[in-house]
Length: 157
Image (cartoon, rainbow, N blue to C red):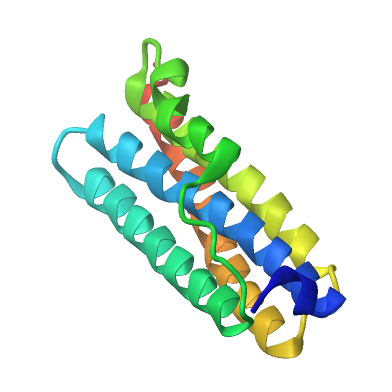
């Protein structure tokens, strides 16, 4: 479907979905980068699972865009550049703590983007999908916060 023949609602929905695709690609890349900096173990496996989850979110959102006749974001756009470099910029000294902190910060940004989408007057089926993702991102964010506190407490004298 050409952009000119799309309704305003369709174009609006597609634009929001493409923003969320960028957000999820950034998370996917960020979690993968974080996992690559952690030695084998439970935390590495957890971060890798979140990267896969975000990849799944990307696929679901891209399908929603295509179903509506739009072109799904596939490159990650300008936002995605943060995902590729944020771990290297953030890590200094206590690497595990810094990585967890940056994961939490990334989730803060994802939550804000999803919150904006939730109030953006999306069609009900799209809103339901976005709310499912949002719930899972909230859980990830909360876990990153708990893990960060646990790492800090372990290292306190």
